[in-house]
Length: 188
Image (cartoon, rainbow, N blue to C red; front, side):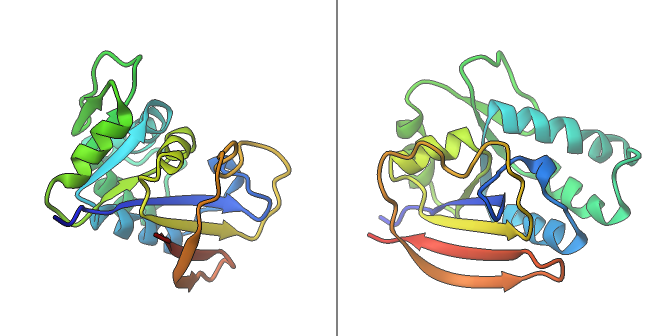
């Protein structure tokens, strides 16, 4: 039985920083991220990423009123992430309600069960949860959106991974900003 793939996409600076505040988002990258979310049956997020995304994007989707920081071209991304089914991995949250279900207990087993369900694929975001999933060999596809910036600080991409993950290049997409989205599949 074919399992639906788990895809990980992350923005990263040239020096490996994954702090979202170090990136310079533009319309093309928001469109690309919305397309990634739209092609997933569901998102798998850790508590920190879930709460950060909910705080940023849910208010607009519910009220239609854009916060001062939100550009008009960000609206499709806000609507897409708001509509997405979400699974939230957390041992501390009591409940979630943004089209979401809590995942508790053995995360690896829970993700394997989700992958066995029929559909086109799952998407994971964040920093800590993807590290655990990569460690367990559960991520099938990686996309690194590399921004032309050196941050010199912040959390770094898959820091602490205990073993190599060998990848095969699948595609490359250059944005007008100079960022490059590189997609890879895990080598068997």
